[in-house]
Length: 223
Picture 1 (cartoon, rainbow, N blue to C red):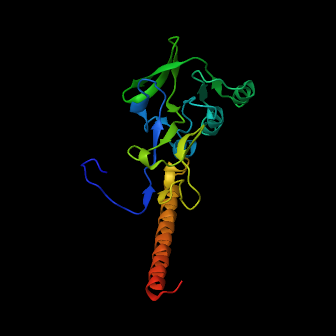
Picture 2: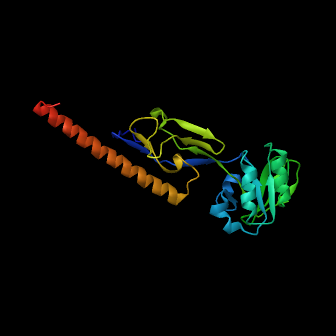
């Protein structure tokens, strides 16, 4: 059922709705998202190279992500923001020159539409030019909950479970792209969508041929 009350009927459904980024509840963070608040060292690293970069932890993988961003700048700072990390991981960050700043982050400072700093709960202001936030992702399934497809939860977020061909746990329901694997970049997601679409088409053509054969055998009395 669509929002205008109309109904679309189909024998197969492909879920290609992507994911929603879930950001920490830090005031001002969402407003800078995609500008000087970024999430991926491979998507955004070149643009923020050699700047003062901070990384705001969002989960257990964040220390590793700080190492990935560090290759773009020697001025790197790590904000655990209440997440506990093994001493060995923090020691590794310190060994490569990443400064670890404990304590909750309470906000951002922006001057002339440019990120200039991070505010800590104790009132300290830490100067940064860019803030990396490895956002958790959640498959967009609004309105599709009734399908009952299986989902999986990991340190990266929530994704739809599908096999390499795109089959989900529900017959006739397929999934493709970031909704299955949020780490896919645009080109990967598009290629996966094309591959799943071809598989859907192939299976429908074969099903049609099987049904046609069954009708013919029924009409002629053959089994």
